[in-house]
Structures are given as C-alpha cells and as structure tokens.
Length: 236
Image (cartoon, rainbow, N blue to C red; front, side):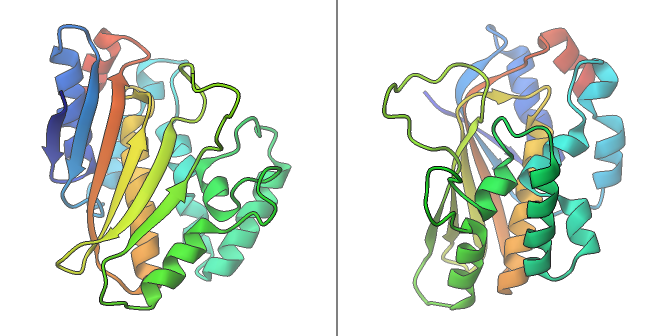
C-alpha cells in the first residue's frame, strides 16, 4: 500500500518523509510517494546546506553538496550561463574525474548510454527543445537513467538508485517532474536528491521559458543507511 507525503518545499517534504521513516515500526517503508508542492523555493537553501549535512552527523556520511551536484551541478551552472558551454565544460570535468564507476546522473542526462547507446543522446537538451515548441498538448518526456540488464532482473542495494524520470506539462501549464527511486536513503541522499532535482527542474523551465510546477518522488524503498538514531539526529 502506498503512502502519500507532502511538503511545501524540498526541505519540508524531506523532513516529513524522514519523520515517517523514523516513526515507522520497521525504520523503513515501501512505496512512499513524496509530493513537493513548490520545489523551486530556494529561499532557505543556505540554511539547509549548513544545518542538515549528513557528513556533520556521521563522518562517513555524504556531503549534501556533492549529492546535489550528481544530479545538477548548480555551482558550475552559475558560472556558465550558456547551456551548451555548460554541457561541454561538465563533460570535460567528468572525463578528468577518477570516480566513473557509475558516472553521475547529470552525465547520463546529457550523454546517455556511453558505451551502450551509439548516439549518446542529450536527454536534457531534447526535453528543453520539446518544451520550447509550446505545443498545446500535454507533454510526457522521459528521462532514462539506467541501462537494461538482460541477464538479470535482480538489482542489489546500492548502485544508481534514480531509475526513471518524466517531465509532464500539467493542465494549468506548469511543468512537473516525476521521478522513481528504487532504494532511497533518507539519511545520506534524499534531501540532496530533492534539491538537485528541483534545480534540474528550474534549469529546464528557465531554458524552455516555462513555469516550474511540482516535484513528485516515488521512493520504492525508503530507509536510512546510517540507522534510525542518526536520521533522527539529522532531522532534529
């Protein structure tokens, strides 16, 4: 059975979902549908980054800024206003990176399936281009983040957890982003994921001259990799 959790902004939604996990008898839950009503409200972003960084609670935890950057490198974007130069610069930086086990979500958005797909399509640019057409029809634009594994349908914990994304043009004309996570770590990843996804949505809408709507995150399995006491400490 699915549970729907709502929040006004990214922090509010993460806090409500994390509180649900903390209070759940098993310390985890399945099919959590988290609706962020106004994801592009970043008024308190500086406070979120300084006060709710997993690494400050657990020395082995993730830096929230690094989590955000795997989805959308917002600091680099601020330095490079032209999106095509932005893509190119990121590609150069990624090639010099030593951490290429899975790449990053942003790399897969702008160059999907390297080594698998012959064209390495820029899914992000395709979405922007489609939205710029201002079609009166509703859009359902897909983002694919993982390649199909024809040998096995079994996926262990870990690895790339953002599986799928879809851009939707809602009846009121705003642009929504819906994403699916198979295993979603609410201690290390979720707040950074929400912010990164919201930054991605904001970028798409700015470039396509559209109005951002809501962010909907389906956490198929929500949990805390650091345990419930540390998640409770983080949200408090």
